[in-house]
Amino acid sequence: MVDTALCLEALSALSGCSVQQSGAGASDLGPQDFVNIVNLRQFYKQEGFEQLEYPSLGSMSLRDEPVNHRDEPVNHRDEPVNLDEENLYSAPAALTAAPASAPEPGPAVRVNPTDFFDRKFDYDFTNVKDGEKRFVRGGEPYNRPCGWRRVALSVWDKYESDVWLGTGSEAWPVSYQGLHMDGSLILTRKQGIQEDDSFLDKAAQSVVYETTKGRGIYSTPDVQLAEKHCKTFKSKTNGKTYKVLLQNRINLTHRKVCQRDRIWLVYVPEDHSQIQTRALVQESVRPYGLLLKEA
Image (cartoon, rainbow, N blue to C red):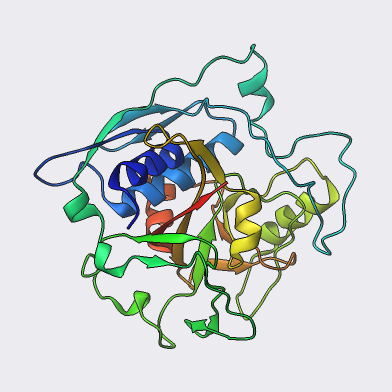
């Protein structure tokens, strides 16, 4: 079983909060709050904001450490692209004009492991190799997180129904959250979903103008692709360095499939307020696993 202290460090690394263990009582935030914060922080950083307002936490700084990618950006054919050394995954110019400084400490969050995690559903995929085996969730391929250890989150019976978390056709497909994913070089295509022309124009511009980021929340059904854009942290518990991802389910009503294979988008309209954006994320992305792997 993954040590609880290590799990809390992983949550801190993902969310930008200082997550501490609470001995009793309810957690300050639930799993849904954490996936909301992860998505909103990334989205608003791309939009050029310096602060994020979140209920019960107040204002959160969006200034953090620069992103270091080990892999070159690729186009939808997975061929290297020349971006003139432009780092598509860095913060906008407004956030990087000043000299780099240490990340501002995030708000303290108390988590009661008893009500936040559901450890009976933990699963160790470290030595699992699926090979030619195929799995399905929500009628779509499920790429299991082989090589990772999954800590289950307490989400059962937390929503209007639990169908989304099942294995049948009404379940939601599985997606992985890589903290540093964005929409550069991605064109959204129609797949039985009606899109307005302005949305398709904006998506197309992200291909024509390479430095234009797509507007929305990005994830992938491919855990290997998510790993390329994952968050890493050094544990104070054992001194080791870990990679961390969120394993989610995605609402098909809001998910858009991108022309670059293995990329999914939850599009955020430009006229959405922060409240509307938060509601959209909460309706679209539900977490159920915290994934850890030694780097």
